[in-house]
Image 1 (cartoon, one colour):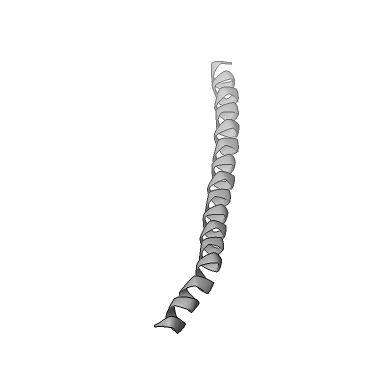
Image 2 (cartoon, rainbow, N blue to C red):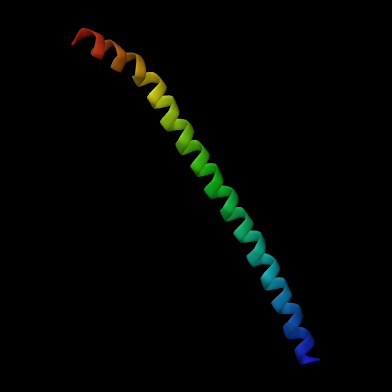
Length: 57
């Protein structure tokens, strides 16, 4: 009886742990995507300026 209760609690704990790890993976992937998009946007805005600077020198 005691073992069954402990197993039930362990299964609940593992379910919560799995859900939290999935959320963490989603959050990290979202952060990586937004960081890359911000970098590409910044580079896209900077390229015309760099191109103009290279032609004037």
